[in-house]
Length: 233
Image (cartoon, rainbow, N blue to C red; front, side, top):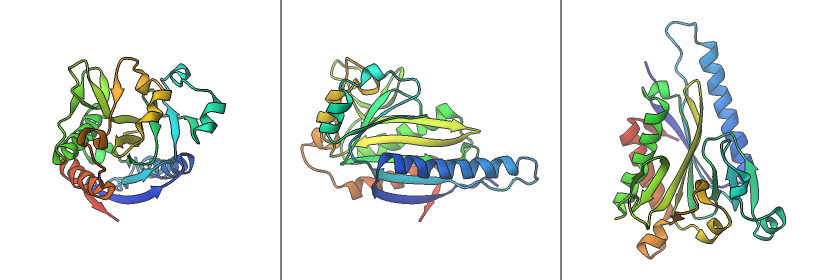
């Protein structure tokens, strides 16, 4: 039987590299279980994980991205108390920082009968449902991943970036939802490679600070609903 139980962990504020290493550990362990049981019948269930966290200021570049989309040098990065990492996820460059909820699902998509494209669609749906609960209307932008506001207008702006890696249908990396994020850091990059679009946050759209705990609770409920999963601590 497919395993749709997902172990949930909230790491709080955690350095990017430390969290990446933790993801890799869980990802590799799931890969090993899947590989070792590929010839058994019935197959042993593979575990699933969902990690929430915030990161100190960091810019991350996807494997298909260009370093030219980082608009400051290493000395300027240090002055901004920020770091820079090349990653093995998809997508281009993005920013993570305090006030932003970063989610890392490490799921065996075969447990959820999903392909990669439908998985990304599901992630976007989780975000859009969550934003709707806070009174924010959002949607998709053709040809781009993530969640946007006013996507089909000249004022299109991204509120949530998505970049994933998958191997043997096991995922890692995930999404970054701007809640109370300091948006000035995005001025140092071409976000996700775009030079003609801006970014926004829930705080900016609503004109007030938003409770991170309330957003996390909404995200968790919508993960359970959209993916038909059961989150456990």
